[in-house]
Image (cartoon, rainbow, N blue to C red; front, side):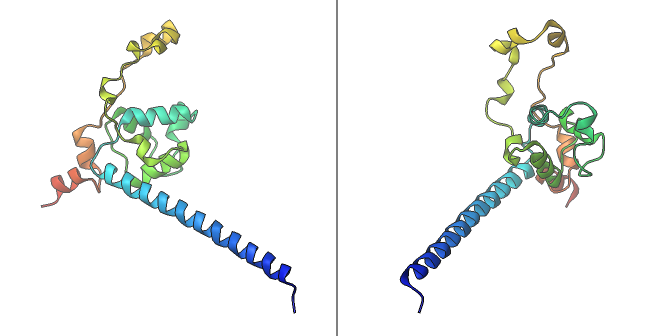
Amino acid sequence: MPAPATFRAAGDRAAARLRKRAEWAAAAAQRRAAHDLAHEQWITGVLAPYRITRALDAADLYGRGRRHCMWGAAQEPAVDEWEAGTRYPLFEQLLALAALTHQSPDSFVAREGDEDFDIRDTTMWCHISKAERTRWRPPITEFTTAAIEECPGTNDCRDTHLF
C-alpha cells in the first residue's frame, strides 16, 4: 500500500492542475467577453481611424510595412484607407490588426473626448521638430458614413442594403 505522503503529493498535483485549468477557463471567458464587446462596438460603426494609426505607430509599422502587415487579411491599400477613414475594416480584419499590434480590439473604439484632442494644446507640441510641425495633420476621429454603410455586417450596411 502506498504511503500517505504519496497520496498527498498526487493530490497536490491534481489540485494544481485543477487550479491551472480554472485560470485558463477564466482567461478564456474574459477573452470571449472582450471579443463580444468589441463585436458589438464594431457593428455600430464606432471605430476611430486615428486609433488605428496610433496602434500601428506604437508597433513600429511604418510605410510599406503597414500595407503588408495584415498577412492577407486586407488588400494593400486597405490599411491606408482605414487610417484615412474611407474604408471600414471587417471584424476579422480588426481582430488581425489587434493581434498584430498587441492591442485589444476595443482599443480601436472612439472614446469620449477624442474629438477634442489637439496635440497643439499639449506640451508635446514643443517636443516636435519644425519639419514635423509642418507635416502635422489633425487626427481623423471617425469613418465616413459611406465607409460604414459599405462594410458587410455593420448595422448601417444592413439598414442600407437590406429591406
